[in-house]
Length: 101
View: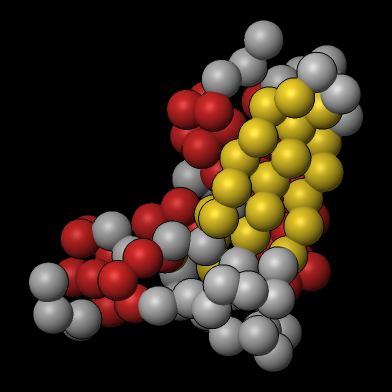
């Protein structure tokens, strides 16, 4: 069975088109759950009105399905909360964005 680390590694392929950084480094992955009935991924966006939320969710589902070779149902949800905060970004993402470390 696929691991959470493998799922997060797959999600590194999903790039937020507005900022050019992957969703893991941006801190958009809120939860990854591997359950007997399937794989669940919860995402948050940098802003609740993010125009790219459907695209990011679709891409996330696509890469997770590919990583698990369609062996498990995959569900990706975009949550309304918690709100994204800059401290969720990795140090490398903060450097790229010009945020203080």
